[in-house]
Image (tube, rainbow, N blue to C red; front, side, top):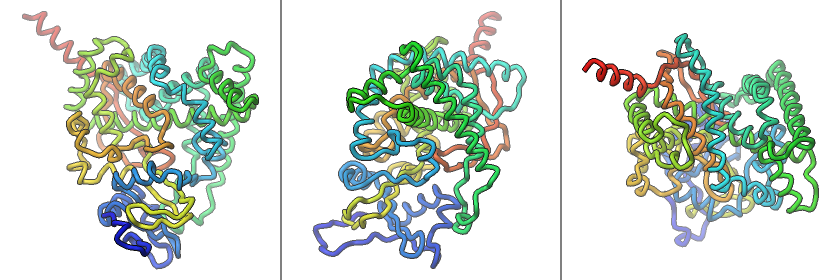
Length: 473
């Protein structure tokens, strides 16, 4: 519950857990960050102060109105919190991690690429890319083989993102890059699961493997840039837009290193969230076959077995509800944080300069006052009528405010494109007994992958049965 700042002149501090006398709540948070933040939000309300060590406090903001106050009303009083030096090594000084005037210039340069007209213009080509990629599932239907679909759907998301951003030079290297990326994912250091684990040295074999992956990945990106510098620019995705936009803004040529940082940032931001979202959507559809049947029927009625157009993707309301409900339960961006650049207040409570303020999307998306039976998968939550009952910041899968994900619309459209095409062709069914657990890393992914079988879509089987009935009548 927020306080009225006009009633008190003294500085107010929100309640919250203190935890262990030395480590505070560090071990609880590291063991299960999503469950921990959800419990704090439920126990202490819209804002809480959490002790993570001796004199070390952070603030959790979970109420939608206070999130708006943090990320929109007080946005200028906070800076983005870059928690992992490792992430900066990968991304460099791209849009995701830059600040101030540099960020404003970079955002202005890339904004035209995310205009709805530009995004919609990519649908026809991207739909064909998806259709060709999904052909590989045909062999799995015949063999009834169990397969981990997590790296497959991740590779598809990479192919879509890389083709859009880097064009044909990426497509020629897509399989190689996918292999490097999978190796890097396996070598990426896991977040420590306790306070003491944070003091253990990193695994040397994994560190060396990750270094090799960085080297190989950068080599591929610099080869793509070389192709762009020498070859036909119209086949190279957004690279002309980035280089020309940079020159218009600065009167300077974009160096290979600067272009590399922008390409990698856009590529990772575009595919990491989409790949994770595709996994969780098909996991939930596997658990709820009636929802899948209803979605397949809508897709069949609208698309009629053909590739989707941009206009058709906007006329699939139940598909959109399914994807949004999946994003609510398993937002790829599971949390974000900001650092107070100056002392200020949220909900009447004082936030000291230098303090870290956390927003757990996972927790906010489970607040029972906005989501009845919050752990239940129910796409009807996102009917037009139900959406109108909630504050906008109750559902923020792509964050909110001026540093929200610039590619949110693109990610949504690509998810519709992929899910609708899979719906017309296949059912992905979770292997009975396969463990599914959240692994909170850069994005929220299934810790043990998603072992599934691939069958012909239920809508196709129903169609075949209808044909047989007609033939026998």
